[in-house]
Image 1: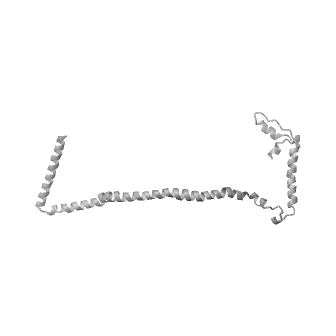
Image 2: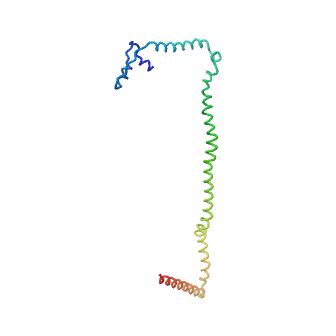
Length: 190
């Protein structure tokens, strides 16, 4: 329709489209002279095609009566089948074989399973070599056991016997004297 508006019409209708577009440009393009041959040819071809279609299909009431139903036209030039063969099937194969089997199951799952195994190993090592011996034994159960053992040992001193009190006092005095003289010699050597 745009071509019809800009063809000039042989002077029958003013060439308003050419004047409108030409006025928007810095230099107006030259107008092509009108020629009836292309107009008549396109009209004959268009109207002739419509006439041929009407003559062939005027008495056809159902698709089964159509004599021109050849497989090539009925199947739209097999465009869907060719498209499926060239693009859809390869894309499905790539998605199924490459992406699903290789990328998903081997690469992604392999990395994730390796990380999971490493995390289990790290958790097991942390639990058995740090948490149980250090945290549980030293700070948790170990502190309680130490208090209980020292309480059991010191309980004997609080038995009300003077002999025990004297032995403890002498042991404490000996330990402090030993520490005092050892530290004093180290300080004097420096």
